[in-house]
Length: 87
Image (cartoon, rainbow, N blue to C red):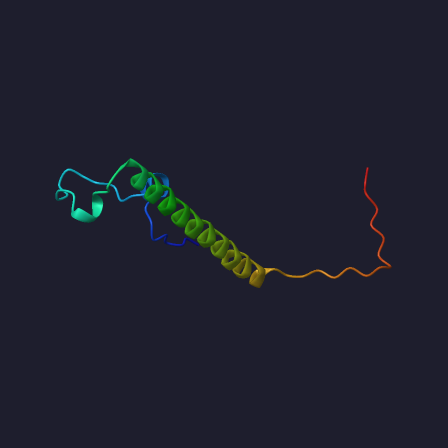
């Protein structure tokens, strides 16, 4: 089973959408007043995206476990049964 993350791996590592040469010039929303604002914005975005990715992984694991558990065949063992390990 696979789950689609809303963010690309590049975004999860660098905290922003990858730019390619064919993209337009930076818009006013991409320009920050100074380096401190940029750094605070970057760290905040990284934390949010990593938290979302972590939650998605946990949800995928739960979903996978439910799917797996549907197919298991539970075994019952009576207390009177004795298992002898062969040598």
